[in-house]
Amino acid sequence: MATTIERLRDLQNSDRIIYRLKKRLAEIPIEIAKLNDKFKQETEELVILDKGVKKEEVTLRETESEVVGLEEEIKKAQRHLMDVKTNREYAALMSEIDGFKKKISNLEEHALLLMDNVGRVKKIRKEEEKRLEKEKSGLDEKLKALAREEAGMREELSEEEKRRPVLSGAIPREMLVAYERVLKAKANRKALTGVKDNICTGCQTRLPTGTLDQLHKGADLVFCEGCNRLLYLE
Ligand SMILES: [Zn+2]
Image (cartoon, rainbow, N blue to C red):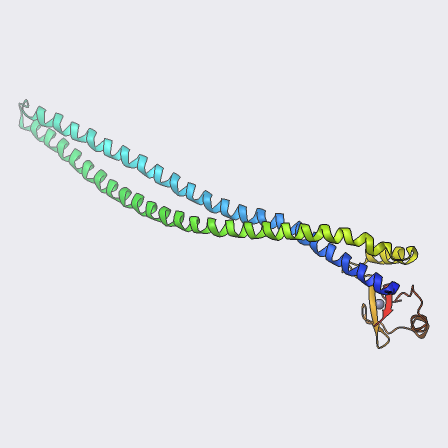
């Protein structure tokens, strides 16, 4: 037959398992949300690149149609050249045509820069897309692993939660109440602690003779004066 203290230690183990599982189960959804958020942010960067490309492509088309318009202007001016009567009119038209040609050459230079830029950004985008594909499969793996971990823990928790009342049912009510009272105050989930070389292993207090006597006599409810934990002899 197990002693009461042994049963209480079993209960404490069960409580610590339940506490650990619940703590981890609460962390998992936060981890999942963080992973998804990070990936979503990176995907949004792709959309920003796309917007940049689209804007430059619009500018490029505008530049090209501007060139077409100027070429029309040149043709019109060249037709006028046939009808001019004076040298002055002729020179004015020729200088107008020169001006159009200069504008076209500037626009074409600008268009080349835009094309270069669009090509460069599209290349970056493609690389980024490839990287994100890889990252997505990595993310899926991580999410699957977390889902497996969660399922395993839920099963373990439900087993442990079935076991706990069996364990606590075998403990005298008075001790159970004392145990649970101390447990509430202990962040590390340890309400029960051993005594080794006359020292409480929970708080390292050297125990007074009276307390040690009680333990040696086999009393059930002996508390540490330092940390209020239930004591047992190791
Ligand atoms: Zn103590």
